[in-house]
Image 1 (cartoon, rainbow, N blue to C red):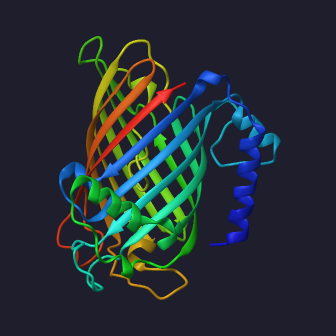
Image 2: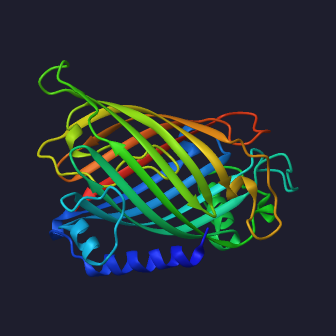
Length: 330
């Protein structure tokens, strides 16, 4: 990782965001995403993720990038463009949250708070996303306070081992996703029903996560032209924060798979620059995801159920968690 180059990219991206204007005031989408294992009645590992996104449609975005001297592979001047700003918070715990001692064979406690900026370009054949994230892992993320306050509210046990969490460390990453649109589209299910297959590849390089991924999603229902899957906290299936308005209500069911080769995971490998708790990470991790999306002219609501394979060698069970997102045009 060459941090000066990434900071230069962050500066360029910020300058680009401040120099462009939305196509119209009504083109913005605000999305709140909550991922939690409470949806499936568990309390371990990746136990909470909350993300707030604002996404705006940008007129002639690729042309403006080129005018600023910024070029990304595969982005054409006539592509549609959406720009996203995000903030999020994640919590990771071991399986036994009642133990106060260090559980050497179980994953570390960790909190993560971050800001992210990115953009997506779209044409009839494919959609590509670039995203730059800057965050803080450690006590500064206030994960202990947030988790235990929530647990007291809902009557759950407090997590007692936060004294063993990863230490404070700033982290930086760049992520890329590419999805091929409408590889297979059929009208055999009637006039108002559609089906499509959306294969994808993804990659991330950075101090929190470095991985390569690939997979696909199948969708069945109505209004498939208006979005490309519900939002998710990365790493996950590449999906969409932005969605087009639709006159009447529409819905679809979806199922997908994503496999990743993990070269680095700070939340398992421990701090990059300080001694900390760590476990033996598995190199291959897979997600199975299924759910439903409903939207109308103003709102989109989506729920996903995620099954994640074991992430470290002494992990006794695979992980399950739910993801709920609410989006609104304004």
